[in-house]
Image 1 (tube, helix red, strand yellow):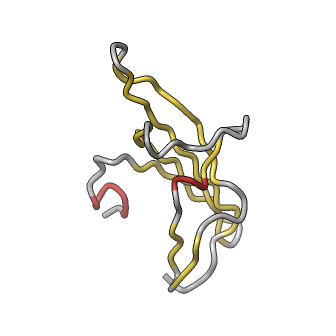
Image 2 (image 1 turned 90 degrees about the vertical axis):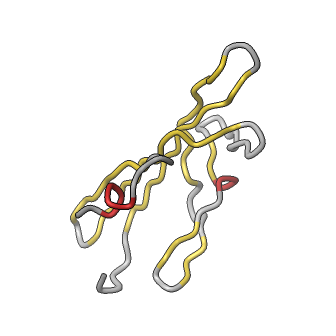
Length: 96
């Protein structure tokens, strides 16, 4: 809230692909590429195309859906982490 910048931002996405007869197939983890993201007015905007597996495989916008997003960062030496799911309520994301 005071405009200080977060350090060591680590964003990991876990997802799934919907396949014909087998239903949902888990996929991931996909990590945010270093230096990716657009910063503006104190916010960061991330694009799913900026995520990839350790093998170099990128997130596929056409076949995959997000299941969960893990966030980790630090600010002035203090660590913060959390998980966001597409069905999370606003109060679950920002706390009470």
